[in-house]
Image (cartoon, rainbow, N blue to C red):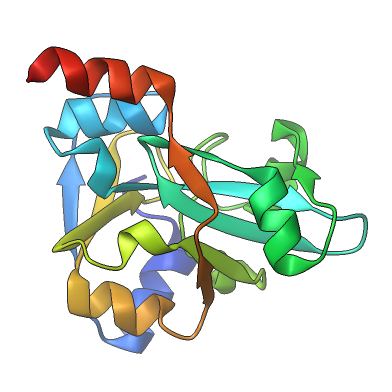
Length: 167
């Protein structure tokens, strides 16, 4: 599989240009960024949360970690992370652990991190562990512009340590 059927149908329906970027098999968003030779700050990962009544997809850079307390304060809710086995039911046309950033395609509201606002392009899982979808800034804004956004994440120590080693 290269792109989840629901994601492909949505992108075609919306009519935004996108590119499929193939990479070796990976199991995390950070690994996908490395394998595809893209900055981890431009790799958007989807983190699904649940507040006891509603699911929500949080889209943050792979180089960041979701700050549940910031999200909860912004949303006036008490979200928790969704376990992997629940994700398989929500994203049935995707491989386990390859959740695309387009939760709205699956009927789930999205909140995306404000740090993605200024990027020239954004990459995210296509629904499998070997392909990413690349959207330029305009296409990302067209798809995500109506979704809520706020500062909901911060860089991980792991990413900061790696970034320090590069400089």
